[in-house]
Image (cartoon, rainbow, N blue to C red):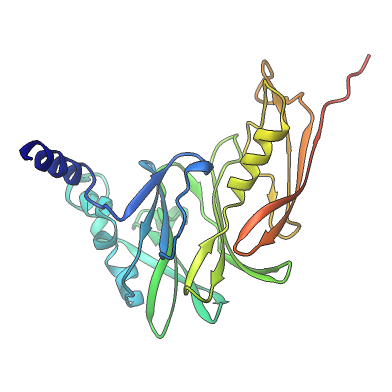
Length: 265
């Protein structure tokens, strides 16, 4: 019994936020299961945190250290930046399922000269009561962009997509529909369906090495294919093309094609 108690205590100390679930690949993304989740990204990894409490907008613009303990740690320990002087820029995105969507971009004093935010949060709510759905802390050279609400195949979609700097063309990207019965935003995870289709379609020794490729408005995914031995610049394995459609609050592959490279004499 004592051993079990000690084990439980050690788990709590190692995992102080038991409401958050980490994931690495698209297959590991947790599901909402009726919960309101905030999808969070930083240099420490990715996690989905359950959000149970509505808060005024001022909480997210002025008390970021309370929301993310990493910011509090930097306030206390970073001697190069004054994290106590965070200020925010609030941008109205529009109405989504009858609720207001707001982008919040966070800056430090030095960021003003470069116009480079260190963080982005997306919140949803009404009457100055909000909950976050995305939080990105820029530890990986992120080029933040504005969120958007689009009508796709008759479905209202909230899209947030910011490019990670580098040659890989990778993004932090999330796409949401709204479940009116459960009153939660649902991340329809196109990356999950796309990864499963690639696994089925591509021959051994073939893979997609770059990010991007998903077009929300066309509901397609199209990307070059690399073979073992290819250089990063020059894929020689042909191309994969997927046509996607909504099925309830998820995306499924309606049609999948792999076009091998044509051999030339």
